[in-house]
Image (cartoon, rainbow, N blue to C red; front, side, top):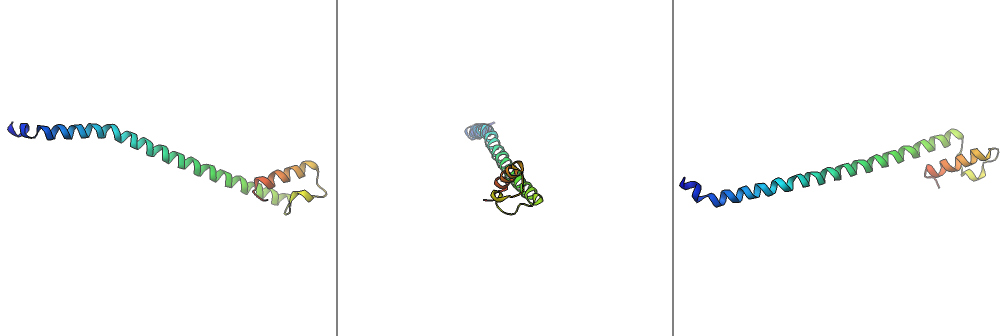
Length: 93
């Protein structure tokens, strides 16, 4: 019993530190999870944009458009408009 009395201050200090740690640790974990989810979402957006550019480029290639869509003789206005849209979407300037 005398040992408990001698170390009671140390034991209460350890209990206080553990209580503070039990409050802080979940907030740190939550912050890390949010950061991870934001990075994952940003990566997904970049991947989707890349896929859209590749699809637009493939459609331009299928249409046979290799030059700027300004000088497309023999195409209808709708085809020229679509080619211009795909040209911008593909990131070609």
